[in-house]
Amino acid sequence: MKYAIVIHESAADMALRDDPATAPAYWAGWMAYSQAMNDVTTAGAGLQPVTTATVVRMRDGKRHVQDGPYADSHELLGGFFVIDVPDLDTALDWAAKCPAARNGSIEVRPVLAN
Amino acid sequence: MPGRAERLDRGAPGASQLSDARAAAETAARASYGRLLAFVAARTRDVAAAEDALAEAFAAALTRWPATGVPDNPEAWLLTAARRRLANLWRHDAVIAAAEPALRLAADEAEAHLPDFPDERLKLLFVCAHPAIDAGVRTPLMLQTVLGLDAARIAAAYREAPATVGQRLVRAKAKLKLARIRFAVPDADALPERLTAVLDAIYAAYTLDWGDGGPLAHEALFLARLVATLLRGESEAQGLAALLLFSASREAARRDGGRFVPLGEQDCTRWNGAMVAEAEAHLLAAVTAVPGRYGLEAAIQSAHAWRARSGTTPWRAVLGLYDRLVAVVPTVGAAVARAATLAEVEGPAAALAALDAIEGADFQPWWAVRADLLARIGADAGPAYARAITLTRDPAVAAYLRNRAGGAGLGQRETKMTAIHYKIVEHDGGWTYKLGDVFADTFRTHDEAMAAARIVAQEQQLGGETVPISWQDADGQWHEETAQGDDRPIADVSDG
Image 1 (cartoon, each protein chain N blue to C red):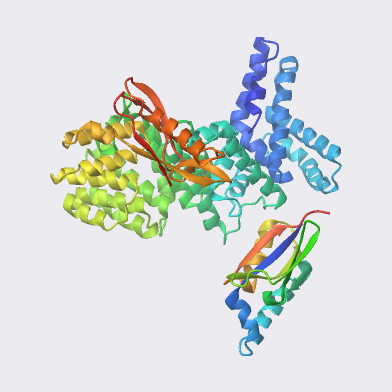
Image 2: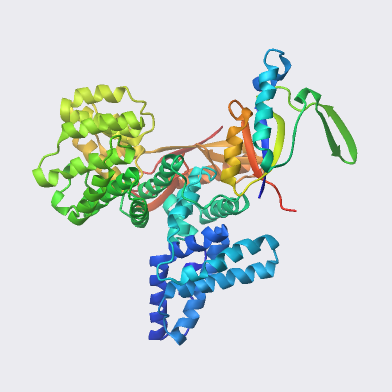
């Protein structure tokens, strides 16, 4: 059974990336997490900051392109994992270990069967 | 379970054989519905499909048993029929993923034919009260899956539309299946917290119908006894069973010809002695170094039950238990009950001071206790009684309070008046009138909504004859009462 672990990082956590004093510890936390989960991970990616995002919408056949989504959100999409585990309870245990769970929130959703 | 009741009632050749079959099917349904469903669902992890398969099995039993006679082991027969039905479903759907539960179920077939197939109801209860399931639907889910109650009956207890409750149940069951929630008793680390959720959901079922000891109170008692039996070592499970048994033991004494009788005024010879003894046995098993909420609440009720033996209530002991309860669960309910107990130990003035320190707002017991205390010190209790009565849902309790208010020098008329303000607001792309947070249907224009609200407001106030009326308060709660021609609620309409 596959679950997406969708990471909503707090803005403060995400800012840790930008400070040379805090960045090493920040990345070390993520490395440890993804390595621990390596055996059950089938896909995943971390994302660049939300300031680099571009939004596209098609309306009435016309393409609307816009810079970044919502700059003042408290929680920002930071990345995701897809893990293959026996049940939701196991997926929730992994989500609870995610570094972003302490200040942000982790959404766990079953992946559509193909 | 949707469909079971109607299937059991479905007409077939009327003969004594049929009534035997029906009686056997109904006995099997009552005694083992939850066990059968839990057994199937624990293996398929699909509660909704298990319910459908069992409904088919019960229907088949009614057709077959009159001709063939009731089988030696009705449960095993029903289980086999349900399993075949599920196997057919999966063949029909040709879903590869379904092969796994089908195989698991087949492997367990031999096990299931034993007269004592494993009782998986505890797992089912933990699934129903899983943290991934919305807290508001946990109790309905338990009532439906473990006890087989249909959505209409559950909805009636919640005073909600059957369709609304049915939809919530369908959504919850879909999540159980799609998110694949684990069917297991949690391990020791997680057990205390998960068990609290199970016990809270059972307690919620009990409080739903506490007033008249209605059917759901009995179903909740069944669940509490079940958990206490299946988890003998868990003190809080024992505590909840004891608490509900103490309360149930006073059911007859709580009403006197329809009149509400509070605990302190109950005739304790009308308490059910067998239930009290059963409660005491559970309470004994609940005793631990660090008692939890339900253990403490049961101990408080045990102290009250002492009155049947000694003729007096040990108020100091009750107060000591409330002190501990407030420390464990700092809820308004516990704090108000503690204040009421304080009145018996230190007097009404001390109790009023304690009550003043609690945020009472719209909590009925806060106002009821306050009114009683004010009356006892000879102060004006009228407004407090009026507020308590407005917040009371049980008509018998309201009548009791009105009577007390009358004794305290407050006329009945003014306390029965209830003001209702409809507000006209924009809603859902149109206009509607609302009462508190409850919205009526949406109308296209402001004026249409206003006209509809005025009609409703007028209907509330039409006087002259004594008829039963029903009205919805700001919590969305429906009230049924028989109104004297001149005491309708005051209703008006304004732009919100």
